[in-house]
Length: 178
Image 1 (cartoon, rainbow, N blue to C red):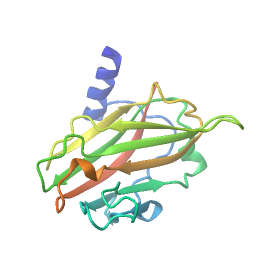
Image 2: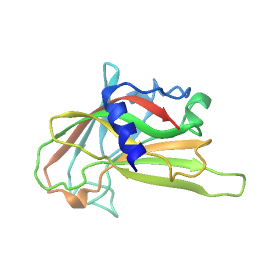
Image 3: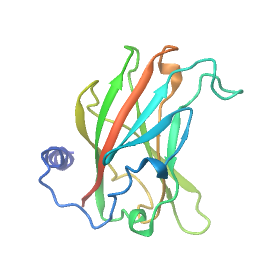
Image 4: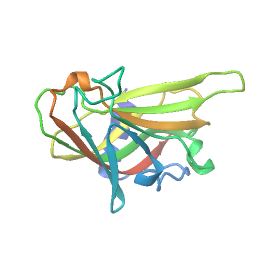
């Protein structure tokens, strides 16, 4: 645990060695598939807007899960086997006061032939409204990091009041070496 805290501090300071995996284009809005939200390019970052609508979601789930997925990873983006953690910059702009865990990040991997996909879910630690942070997600318990097949970001509208809005800007995806 002490080693991971050190990695978080070094990542936040920008003074660590990153793995060879190229994640420079992950924060490209047109690559992501949004549902119940919008995503636009903002320079080298992408901005995601998730309006909370308890009446207008999917028919079966009007109080749903605004989300976006990156399902077409390049070969250079798929192998995270040397990574200890994933880091990225994120700035939350939330209009309400009810969210306790505003954003969930997902990493989906695929094992050998007959293995089902495995999805690891992460809360984003240290997320504060109107302040950019460097999020660092510990990947040590994620299986099959040599074959990352999808990334996802979502919220659960049940944690919000109708009419609130979750907006965030994300950039600078990087892997931290083991």
